Amino acid sequence: MKVDKKAYIILEDEQVFEGKFFGCEKDIIGEAVFTTGMTGYVETLTDPSYYGQIIIQTFPMIGNYGVMSSDAESRECNVSAFGYVVREKCDIPSNFRCETDIDSFLKDKGITGVYDIDTRRLTSLIREKGVMNACICSDITNIDINKVKYYTVVDAVKNTSCSKKCFYKAKNSLFSVALIDYGAKQNIIRKLNEHGCDVTVFPFDCKADEIIDGGFVGLMLSNGPGDPKENTYSIEQLKKLTGKLPIFGICLGHQLLALAFGGDTYKLKYGHRGANQPATDLITGRTFITSQNHGYAVDIASIDKSVGEVSFINANDGTCEGMIYNNYSAFSVQFHPEACGGPHDTEFLFDRFINLMKKEAADNA
Image (tube, rainbow, N blue to C red):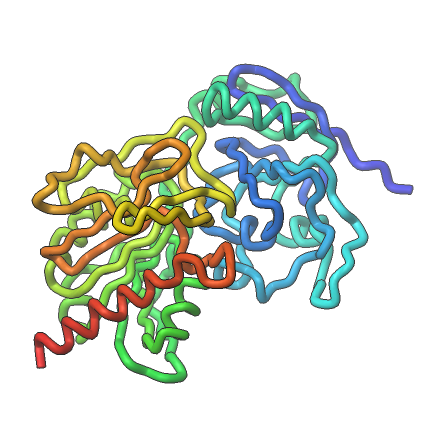
């Protein structure tokens, strides 16, 4: 019987957790974050927004239904996270759709995994102290703790965006939409196609003129990883695009749009990651349970009320979950309406985007 090799997680404050390797057995450094999702670990692992991070799953057993490539949220089922930490892994999954087990999947993708870890205690530490850097290693005596302390996620969008323009056609084509890929989840494209939008995906470093001159009716700004303020070029291009066509921003796209409108962003203590984050619609007063994955938030007070107004807030901590820029036919949300935590939930936001494009088309007729 194979005995898995010992693995150690060392936090930047030098606390050590002992577990066992699975997946790829290699030393890595990353930003340790936790996610509270009870299911959807395939979508979590393949979400580009986790670039540079070590994912800690709070749900105790991971891998019980295996891995299915059709559930992936990235191109070619890529994994952008650097590490994966679970309490217990399941080696014998049970699901008629299963293609492989979680251990084999991580090995194939070259991702370091650790199991048999007290994830409850580890999560509690991060909640109390905030997000911390960490390393996963096989020998604690060879670790330079300063490298762990001063690790920073850089070039996150550059490393997760597509490298060239690509096209996705809808079955029932109504509108032509440009999508800037900052690390886009594939379900955003699928939802746009379902709503009758032909989608042309642009790399993160595209020029505003390419979109303005492309004959598009609307612009989608995708999710993505890292510090939004790092993307200075993208912010400058967005400034040229505001007011030119209807815009819908999701997650990082929401943050970048706020920065383009003169707002500010800041890093959250431990972020919002999971499928059970409550977002309250300030217009209707209704609270939706949403899927989220972000470590930064828009500073509500930083945006001039004559430019934009808050549309959603997080029901737990009151942080900004959405903005509307009525004079510019633009709006954005911090959560993922394409993820559909329930049967429909916030998918109506895609209809709002469609209605903005219909109005734009009618005004230009």
